[in-house]
Amino acid sequence: MELNKIRLKIDRIDFEIIKLLEERFELALLAGKIKSNVYDEEREKQVYENVSKIITSPIIREDFKLSLFEKIISESRYLQSRGFSLIGFQGEHGANSEEAAKIFDPLLIPIPCKEFKDVVEGVKKEFFEFGILPIENTSEGSIGEVSDLLISSELYIVGEIKLQVNHSLLTLPETNFDEIRFVYSHPQALAQCRNFISQNNFEPKPFYDTAGAAKWLAETRQPGSAVIANSSCKLYGLKVLKENIQDEKINLTRFIVISRKSSNNGDKCSVVFCIQDRVGALCETLKIFSEYGINLSRIESRPNRKEKGKYIFLVDFLGSIENENVKKALELLKSKTETFKFLGCYREYKKP
Image (cartoon, rainbow, N blue to C red):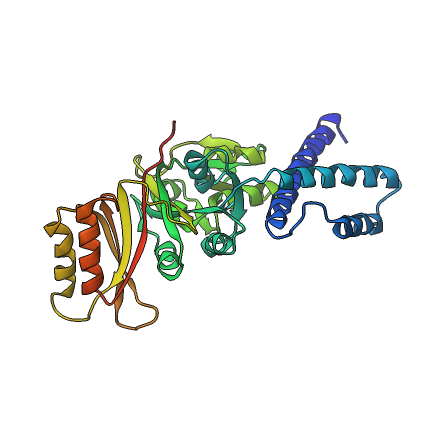
C-alpha cells in the first residue's frame, strides 16, 4: 500500500461522506415540510437507538458515534427552522435543470428528483414551492412527457429560462481518452451529440439523467467508460476531457417553472385547449389570436389520453393577461373550444 494511494482513497471517502450528508439534509428539509414541529423528541430518540444498533469495528467509539449524530440532528433541526423554499428538478446535482433553477431564484434550495413526474407530484403535494422542467430543445424539439404532465396537472407556469446547454465528455481521473468504449447519458444528450459519438466509435448507453450518469460513474468506477454531461459535473471528482461536443453549437433548452399559484406577472402566456373534431375547427380557433393581434410563439399537439383520436393543443403567445385584447381573445377561445385551461402568465428569467 502506497501512501499516495491511501490518501486518494481517503479523499474519495471524504467526498462521499459530504455528498451523503447533503442528501440527508435535503431529506430533512422535505420532512420539515410535513411535520408540524421542528423538534420531534420521539424521532430523535429513535435515530439514536438506530445508530447505536449499527455494528462497527472497535475503531469507532460509541461516544464518538453518538456525538457525531448529535451534530447532524442539530444541523437538521436548524435547517428546518429556517423555512427554506424548495424547488424540485429532475436529475442529480450538476444537472442543467439545477443551473436553470438558480437563474430563476438563487435563494431557492434545489432538490433532485428521479423523474419529471416526481417534480410535478412534489409541487402538487406541497413538498416544493416550485418545480422546474425542460419543455423543449432547439435540437430535439418538444419533450412530450413534460407537455403531458402540464396538461394533466392543475399547476401553473410562473417563469421560463432559456439556457445554452453545452455538453462535455467527462471520465474518471485515471481513464485516458483512447481507453473509452462506452459513453453514458440521458437519451436527449446522446441524441444531441450523435456526430461526436459516431466519430469516436463510442457505444452510447442511455441513462435516466446526465448528472446522474456522472454520479454513477464516480461511484462505480467503471473502466473504459465516460459520460456526457454539464462540465459542472466534475463536482463528482471526474475530469473534463472535451467541452462543447454537441452537434449544434447553439443548443438552447427552454425550462419552465411551475407552481401551485399563478403569478399573472409577465409578457407571455400559455393555454391548453381541445377542439371539436370537424373540418376547419383548428383554423377558426387560431384565427382568434390573429384577429386580436396576438403573436403565437409555439403550438404543440398532444394525443388526448381521455378521448382516443382527439388531440389537445398547447399554445404559447406573447402578451399579458392584463391586456384587454388578450382577455377578450381568451374569453372567445373558451367559447369556441370543448375544454380550456389557462396555464399562466409569466416572464423570462436571465442570468444577472
